[in-house]
Length: 278
Image 1 (cartoon, rainbow, N blue to C red):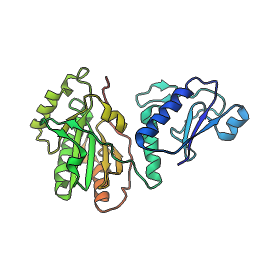
Image 2 (tube, rainbow, N blue to C red; image 1 turned 180 degrees about the vertical axis):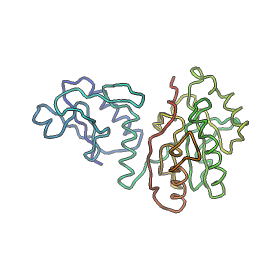
Image 3 (cartoon, helix red, strand yellow; image 1 turned 90 degrees about the vertical axis):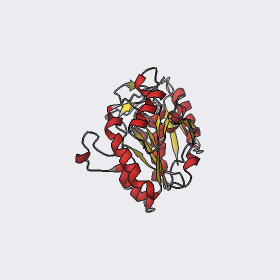
Image 4 (cartoon, rainbow, N blue to C red; image 1 turned 90 degrees about the horizontal axis):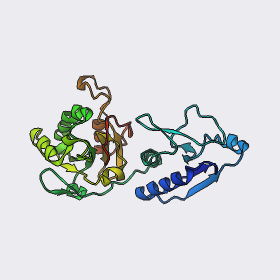
């Protein structure tokens, strides 16, 4: 993969952006060297279609395609999912683009290990499910209306595919100090009331959520038997009405992986509440 970091030296945010890019590359285990491209003149900017500093490109494609940004020497802006304007891409933007690029090249992000307490008091690890043919890591929580809307569908999916070697774990990374309904005690109550057929884990430090680049609840990371990421995103295309779903992203991805095929849709935008960070 060709990784280019384009910058204009007069823009103060490029040092932080470069450090952020290198940090995400290390977390993802990507060892390709970052090519630094300094843009000094308007002529260079026009020739490179440079939308401002900093700009990160993977195999020539901008990680966040600029929309109606002028080409030239300027400090660039980025728009977050919640509408904020910021001067450099977030780690989540970089991570999402890297994983998509790896998949496009025929590879796939490898599952990040973890060891987290479940509502039953046990410590849960991915290796506990070593025999699973398909393994889903799903970030969710108690209080979020989106998570609640999809909850029964996730339960049903797990039960429908359990005999075929599919296993899910649910992880809540929300800060209980911000949302009391997401405390470990209330997680335990929820798991019991809904008779969860999967472990429900608490990421107290939020390190696992950050390592995965999760930002929403729910947000699915689906891995094959080799623990290579094969699908990332939302459960389906309609959280409000199960009867109106047109695209069953999660189920379709499971079916594809079980048959050794590549999911027709490997990435969708997660839809849900933001993770409540400390």
